[in-house]
Length: 367
Ligand SMILES: NC(=O)c1ccc[n+]([C@@H]2O[C@H](COP(=O)([O-])OP(=O)(O)OC[C@H]3O[C@@H](n4cnc5c(N)ncnc54)[C@H](O)[C@@H]3O)[C@@H](O)[C@H]2O)c1
Image (tube, rainbow, N blue to C red; front, side, top):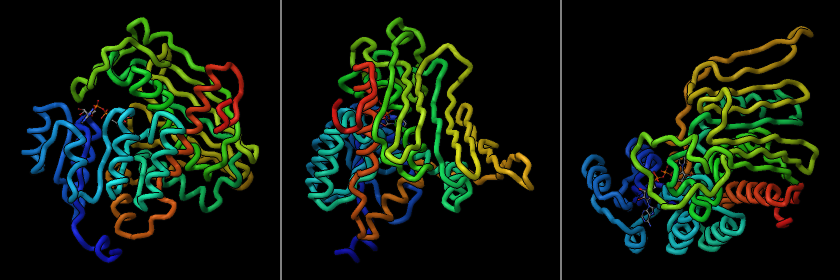
């Protein structure tokens, strides 16, 4: 069977037709020996258009019909967050491998259910953390792994938007459908980068605060360039700014901040700053630029110095798809059951619990 996974053309179904569904679809087309054979989503026009443009034979409105097929090897989940767990668990139980958009789930319990399903089925469950495959992040990770920063003891990680609520009244601003606001949406990317770059420290406690100052007053909304979002019809129910302080068991700390809308200097900007015993580093991305985003701070001949490496552009989502498929083909699936997505879901859940309680909480304890 392992040989079979290694060589045959893999058949994929994608659920969701928004920017992410389109990005997965486009990405799979660029990889050899994989076919997207089925799509599901509510937008009939997009479904027909993608079917034609990308030669996808089978198109469904309801994801259940896509999952009912018995000839798919893998599923990409590109739906609103509340569907990640039910779609993934059904797909895994049906023997499919699953690539799930971030966040893995709305809560630690939901994510744990997905990981358990992946382990029981013996299938791959990966979460899309596409920013790991930026050129600056890959170069910095390489430098860190060579010991360039020494021991990293503090990180600051943030994503801030001036005016970027992804459509007021869409599923993004509905607590039940999204699980939260910018913390679970943008903050999960920045939490991921901080943990990934600093070697996955075990986060023991968090202290967080959330605010909803602009969204509930109808301010800070941005129309989605990709078309209208699947709606919820509800009011603005989530935070528009979150700030959190995370303590690792080994004493390292992370300051995390995420916002969709604030009165401040940000456009749509994210970045990570790392402080280590042998050096420091800063990635600062303004409005998704890819040029001159990484600075490394070290001493040269005893003098404070700054290095700005020349970087290749990373592949983002395409690299994530390649890694997912390569993992399936490898037949080595232990440790690929969604564990990193679960850890991030538990930390974010603890942040929301802390914000609600108004005090520091222990991760995974519910208090
Ligand atoms: N990795 C990234 O950089 C990135 C960027 C944006 C969004 N995301 C994530 O991707 C996911 C989707 O976000 P989006 O912006 O593409 O959303 P979107 O609202 O644009 O698209 C959601 C799609 O899901 C479909 N859908 C909803 N319910 C369905 C059902 N029951 N059956 C079939 N289809 C259904 C909708 O028809 C729509 O096509 C979210 O989890 C989000 O957090 C990731």
